[in-house]
Length: 170
Ligand SMILES: C[S@@+](CC[C@H](N)C(=O)[O-])C[C@H]1O[C@@H](n2cnc3c(N)ncnc32)[C@H](O)[C@@H]1O
Image (cartoon, rainbow, N blue to C red; front, side):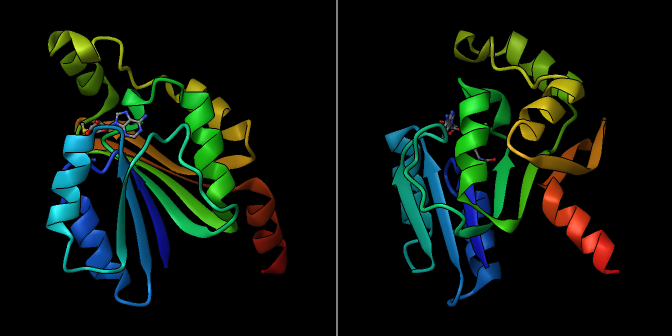
């Protein structure tokens, strides 16, 4: 399995993903901050299936249609240009690929936290469900599951055309 992890931070999830995909898989983890990238690279240095880069989700030069999963773990509100980030990540997914947005807290708590935290994240808001659906839909991604409450935020999506073909084949 080939996985993209934007905004990998210090690599807590990167390490788990790399262990899960195993030596035949690939995790491409990246972060806009060079300090975070270095910390992540250090954490996964014994896992050759994890490649770590300093780059943004909006601009990372992915090969097209090469990945099975893009997992945005606690990073989606931080994308400065969400439409561009979604388009870039989606173009890197295979037609059967999955797109995931995941947080340990719900969007109300995320946005409240960012409003009260450092001014650098003051405007880093999780958009409404409708806006996220529209952003994903604009690149052909259809939401498969969505939950957003005090237990966390979890959205999974796949390409609408692939979902339709799978349904017809049943
Ligand atoms: C809240 S931290 C989460 C880190 C990690 N995913 C975790 O859960 O431990 C968000 C990270 O995303 C990075 N980031 C912000 N905007 C980004 C972008 N456009 N592309 C890639 N990384 C970005 C930040 O530098 C920060 O390290």
